Length: 317
Image (cartoon, rainbow, N blue to C red; front, side, top):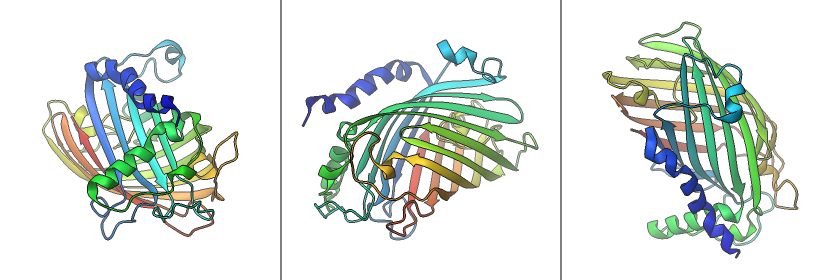
């Protein structure tokens, strides 16, 4: 085992430390597919089985270097900028099987650091996210999942020796969202389009978000790479709403299914077209908020007919 793999997470945390110290808004995402997060019996540790993300948005949003030349950001009426640190874990169905499962998705851990920019006006919100990270043992996903299962006293994963090899990842993600009716207090709808380009993921997407509730925040809805709705309210009062989101996508590459880019590795036959659906609710007051999201994905690869499901809990402060 290469000693450098143990340094990956501490190095990324050190890079994130300056943002932690001056963060105006913090979000913590926890994703899981067990019955604690998913209505019903859960999906029993498979597909996207576990993830955690920490977002830190700056008190004084600043464009740095090449960012100042981005069209639509420099003169935006409202600008948000920040950093994120994420770890994602993907496994096949039979995690107790120590052998390579050739007709199921490979074991994959992904650890990455994000730089996020969000520009908004009354009708349009656009975001840009740059992800730099690593796939493979250096993500330390095998250690995290094994430790977590050991602490809970549930079956241990036995097949991590077959995970993808270490590979640096670069991904640039763009998304644009519209509010055709502008701000609405009790209900709104937000269409969106987006694209990602990188060795980790290359895709295009389009979808729609519907919201209804009490005192909707003046934004384009809850997203992983934009400041939390509750945090944006500042000193405003209580807000509560539910939302539903549907999205179609075309995927040209997904490293967690296609395998390593430059080396032989386990892989499956990716389904190029797919869809995602989300149902969620959020409550907030002032700078604090709590959100729950249930996510559903259509079949991702041909070898197994499965529809991944997972739940997310998001804390905002």
